[in-house]
Picture 1 (spheres, rainbow, N blue to C red):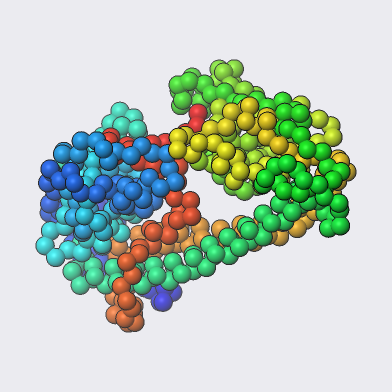
Picture 2 (picture 1 turned 90 degrees about the vertical axis):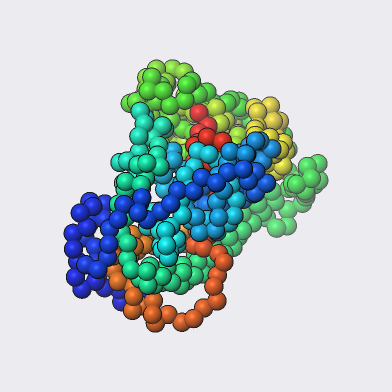
Length: 480
């Protein structure tokens, strides 16, 4: 179906750089001719809505799930704006990053948002696709005003001056019908890959758990560990605390965060929670940011081969072994001067099985945090060093192919997201003609779920997309 798409027969210059050439029978109009701004207020009893980069308009109750964001439901909302199904709303401060979308819900949004409604019989879902394209985001950035990127704002009067493509009404519906059908297929494919990844992860974790708590000998004699979640362990293994194996220290972050005095220099690599949790590799080979020389002096340096552990935020308890010299921020703990009879890779695998127990230990009602006392007092199983080495080799061998399969599935999902994004951009701006394909689609029951509902569905929103409804800005969970 996708491979059959072709360009339209004839094109014309739209006169708008971000749109380029459009089909000859399409129109180009400024947003002031396409939308009416909605400013209805005094609806404080309605549910709260939010606009996110990845998922568009969602209920704030969904936003709060699995995040540490403050609930604003008890605050004065008399000035909040009413949003009806079919309205389009955007975050003035983040429209240039894609925080815009059509609402499926009736609710209210922060006064810092802009709410518009398509005029006449225009299809709101067509504009949902158009206004969430990367090209529109760049155009929104061009029209946004502010001293720095954190203050850029797409004001209503400037939004109205942006020109958008306008296909005939029947083509708008054909485009939406095509994407509804395509998204159902993509969702099914992504879900199958997500299920595969989950099964592979469970298999991988089972191998690690069995190895680091029971060893490789199925006939070994066991003894009670005295720790509920460890159960019985090999009799000849030592049970001690992490602090008996080495020194536990916490990182340090220069303040203020993001200051050019300390950050984005040519000093040591800056190791944050985000760098540690960006993938599931055992090792950390690089970072996206370096400190300045001054920043290095105000942080904690670590050597190559240091075992690290995230100690705060929603992703606490994730281990990593650094293959670079760098500086760690205060969301990261490091294990220094480990005893010679401890294999740090064995300790890595051990910590990888403790994450769920670490999260249960801290108070998840507040910002999760592990101090060095909690980490240092954590129980650890220590086999003889020769056995540790055998366990490490076995786990690497047995989980290596599983990890490869997981990465391949994740890569396929990522490529599909990118392909879909490019396909939408080409269709909504008229580079590809879907009229014939849409007309030949089979009748399907209307799905209430959109493609965006599958984005990050296992992990909630990305940490850098948690939005603040009071200001219309996004909370950046930068653990710096």
